[in-house]
Structure formats: C-alpha cells, structure tokens
Amino acid sequence: MKVLIIGSGGREHALAWAISKSPELTKLYVAPGNPGTAEIAENIPLRALDSQGIVEFSLKNKVDLVIPGPEAPLVAGIADALAAVGIACLGPSAAAAQLEGSKVFMKEIADSAGIPTAGWQKFFESQAAHDYVDVMGAPIVVKADGLAAGKGVVVAATVDEAHNAITSIMEDRVHGMAGAAVVIEQCLVGEEISLFALCDGEAALFFGAAADHKRVGEGDTGPNTGGMGAIYNPPWATEDVIRRGMDEVIRPALTEMARRGLPFRGFIFAGLMVEPDGPKLIEFNVRFGDPECETILPMVSSDILPVLMAAAGGRLGEAKISWKNGSAATVVMCAKGYPGAYATGSEIFGLDEAAGLPGVTIFHAGTMAERGGVLANGGRVLAINAVGGDLAEALSRAYAAVDRLDWDDGFCRRDIGRRALAR
Image: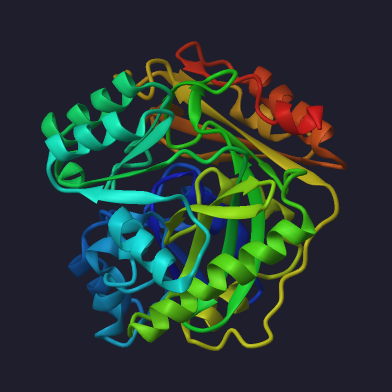
C-alpha cells in the first residue's frame, strides 16, 4: 500500500513513524516533510496547500491513501479534490471540516445535536461584542471564528482582557479574516482533555486521550501556543469520562453531521472540560492534535494502517486497535521568543544521543537539514516523547532526553504533567 502524508510538523513525523512499521506498507511519502520524516519516508517538495500538485502526484504514483496532517488543507478542500479522482483520503470534506474552520458552525452543530457545551453568542460587529462583555462580565472566553493556528482563543480573566481580545481579533485583525466574527462564551472550569476518535462517516473508534499544555509559561502562564507538551491518558480521563465523551459528544456530532449530508471521515478531536457533572465540549478539531499525536501513537501496539484505510473507505466496522500498558509524555522544545518573534537557523546538537535513551523518540516539528546538521526552522521545533511504566517514569525519561540536547536557542516548559503527578 502506498501512503502520502501531508504536512511538515511533529504530528506528521509521528504518523509517518507509526505507519512505517506496517507490513502492509510498500511506499511512504511525506509532503513536504522534514529531516525526521526523511529518515523513514521519501519527502516530496509539495506545499500542504498545493491541492493540484498533491492530486497530480498521487495519480502519477498510484497512491492508495492520503492522510492530511494539519487542518488547513482539509478546510481548503483537499479531500474533495482527491475524491474527485478516486483517491482515498483520511479526512473530511471542506464542508465537514467547518467543524474546525468555523467556531460558529461548531457551536451550532453542538446545539442541534444536544451536546453539552458552554453558553455562547456570535458577533460579526465589534461594538456589539464589547457591549455583551460589559453585560456578562468575566471570566469569559473570546474566540476568533476562523482558523488561527491554535492562537485565536483568549480566556479573559477580566473585562479589560476581553475587550482587548475583541479589539485585537476583530479590529486589528491579528488573525486576518479568521477574526471577521467571534464567538464569546461562558468560561468552563475543570480539567481539560483531548479525546480522539477515528470516524468513517457513521462509526467512531476511540483513538486515545491526552492532556495538552497550551500556555507558553510554566504554571500555565503567558499566551496560548500550538502546544508545549502533552501527557497520555491523564487521571481525570476516567473510563466514565471517555465513555460519556464518546456517547454524549462525538457520536451525536457524527449523527448530526450525517443528517445534514456532511458525513465526517477521519480523525475527530474533541476538546473537553471535565466538570463535576461530566464532560462538556470546548471545541472540535478535524485532525489529530499536535503534540497529542506524538504522545498517543507510541502507546499503540497494533498496526494502524489497515484501520486508517478502513476509516477512509467507510468500512470501520469492527476494526480495533491495541494499546500498550504504561504511560507516555511529550515535551515540546521551542525557539526562544515563541509564540512571538523567534530566530531560525541555529544548529541543534546531541539528537542521536538523546534519541538513544530508553523509551525515547524524537519527532521533528520545525527543523531543516543543512551542512550535515539539523537546524531550527520554526517556533515549535522538536517533540521529545518518552514512554514508561507510569507517568513519572515517562516524564523523567523525556526530560533526560531534553538535557542531552545542546541547543542554546531552545527552551521548554519544565512542568509538563505536574498536575497529573500531584493527583
């Protein structure tokens, strides 16, 4: 089976790493890939948003399955373009991808399906949004309607912070047209989990749970990022929470999407807040999370490729995956300055030594190869994953690997998983 993965980050490296182990694989491509994927696949110099190029390459090379990693190609319609030429794609149509592409659409689906979620209002004009905040007070959450690379959500602790968020998103357009509208919603309180399922339009197969650390600073301070680290199966992701998340959130959403003629295929990611009365939906994403993907896939013990192909073909049926015992954690190393301005081009030393430690796998997220070395080429640069008998061992191994790296321009949070360990 020939597989093409679209993307260049740590999630795509993790997907390639997992799929490369399959005995059913005959050829693996990644477009455009990174130095990590180059070690296990053939990198193809195509941009993730080059739909025409991806379709032409897939036809010419007789690709059996295309797996888009990031959300942008899905929202832009890559699954539709591939379907038009008969190539299987593990991802939703552009219309179904609006579950992530529009916060307004996602909340409307949740309300129609009876999914528990925060109370909300949509605004297309900034003054009305400001007036609403004055009435509702704080804490309150302000979200850009469109895609903003994980940075379009502001959890405002004060009314002034909420007003500043509205001004930044709607008036200053820091996220471009993603800020043409905002959703303002109730601030949920509890522990957050990322719940994943693989879907074929009707059926949903549980595909792991993790807890992401979104803020850049230790103690969950500073601005949101694309993710500073994650832990596998946090203690608040109990069997009951996972069951309710699947039965009360994910499956009703699939039913509502199908009812609207928008069957959802691919990975669905439900961000849930676990409150005393059960999980509530924060948001849907239409792809595997990052760094959750790098955290969950090392815990899978079975071949995932046949399951992915079955989902893409609408044949998920009785498919199953098997899980390892123990736990996993991922620490993300970033370029200094991230999520603001950062420099690129600094060399990273010690990668082989760090990756050789027990239980450690290093996924490249924002790197480039040059002059025989690996250089930083992004904000989030490396995802350091480790598995262990329990979370404490996994974290200890991950940070031991971080300490083996020699990269003066890099940093990471040193408190990944601390709340879970305290439990």
